[in-house]
Length: 249
Image (cartoon, rainbow, N blue to C red; front, side):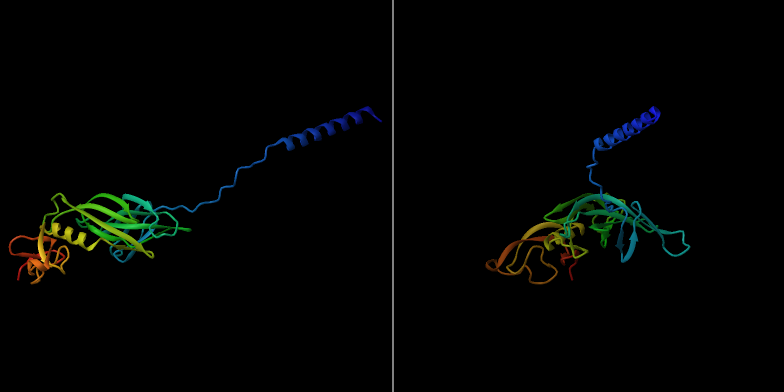
């Protein structure tokens, strides 16, 4: 056999052998393939504010009040975010505060929740907290959302610094956000916002904390048929009707 052909055959065999060895010695790629995760972002979700759908994009929404109008309704992510599984479906949810301004002097604060879903997020209805309040903290307590902020007394100018501490509790029922603040706490906070003060008094056994003192008889029972409860003292000539202070009639 021609020596050149023998050499060429040897070279081919050597190259194939080296290639096979390199292929066999190549480490296997054992890293798991990452699955594409759906992004959950409370700043890019649709919420219901004052009965209308509002879609935030990067935490911002702008809509004309009427077509062609220069005045716009601006809705923005404010913050004070807190996370938890608020509807018990095993997925993380986020509660936060947003604001809305429609061109006037008011800035209205709302609490809303972005519910985690397999497709990203589903926004709830937003519940009004107040106009130009001073948000403090948002926390989770016993599975419920607690929003703490300061507000002004009724009748105080908006230039006054909010000074009345308010704590309101919210929970998800189904896919809707609802307020679940205990009645006694709501009445106590209403008393303070209306300029009243918290006191105690002997009232009828059937009366609970903060009875309606505008009604005759709530605290008019004998000592043997009375117990001590918290009451709202609205000052001379006024009474507490369970929602606020009003003039005695």
